[in-house]
Length: 500
Ligand code: AHR
Image 1 (tube, rainbow, N blue to C red):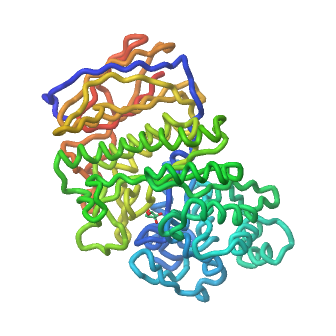
Image 2: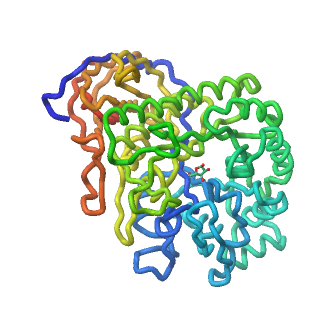
Image 3: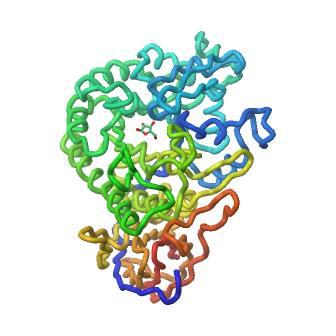
């Protein structure tokens, strides 16, 4: 950031003349689970709250999310999904049962936020719903009834019950997850046993009244390639998507993940290395999927990803509340670049999670709200939604720490329907600026505008007292020479350029 920062040089070639696949907007999806203060407090405050709300959903959070163009929202979990019974969350709120949330903090969920409230939230922010059905403790009947309740336009008892509860028109539900982490919290199943269960549940995942369900099978935990292989061979012909969960845990040790805000440069570097492992996982799972599905009919859905640190000191260990720094912004940008680059196979991804949980967009404290550096990255990157991938090559010296080396730069590019080329570039190095020359194949640059997200410190973050410490600013450190641009990327930064 400082003008006197040591600078290294790098080159990039942007193949604007070789457009690739579409970057489905759903890659910019999110996830909200009944976990900690994610749904309750973060999204739902109830209609009687002094916090301004619309039918119980807080207005400030909705406004911030609307501005991000959130394409899809996954709910109700996560591990919670395999203990959730949808009937608990419909009808008059005062009569809904109070249930123990045994996964997350052992707190009582009064079910004030159920199907109608979730669908209302989706409509308020303009996102498509992605519902995860309960396979762990539920039945095919329960899932079938839920789908009918939500999507049937018929005169059936379930459709009429929905009408009685205030929703006349059926909702559209495209995305249906069949279980969550069925290899773990969702039932501790083997891939063979899950495949059999999937067959049974999938039979009853019916498309009704013109609604078309896309069935998403529960995918692997990180590097469990056998899970992918077994599912592709057993149930590949019955699925539209296969999920993948991978979290960045800097220490690689779930018992001591490390602080969200208090870390060394070695831990920064380790975080980058762990994040880049997503690239390896996507590549290897894709290769297995290719074996069974060379035409890429089945989508890879990375429906849980992001940083997972130790909870904030003093907060409930089961609530997964963590701060969010410039480091998280870099992690988000790298992951989104990876998903963009693999958009021929990845058609959806959901960051964990939306508000107050893990790598959140938004943090709330009663009536206060903070937009995180991760929020800023989603705001900067939304230009890639539904755009066409443009391939690129990078040549830069590595960024090293001890024996470990990662690329200094990470990037992706796309062209939108108006013909504008967007280039998102991350400088992972916290100590060096990079003077980058980008050669534009098949494009003459006339004008360039951009934004940069950076800060003096690696752990810079926004707080309730200082909510604007880290936000993007206009980027002006560039020169244009027809089919070449030259940009100076500050250390530890995310830059998004629009080349016109
Ligand atoms: O996102 C938090 C939890 O992480 C989810 O509930 C679970 O699916 C995963 O293990």
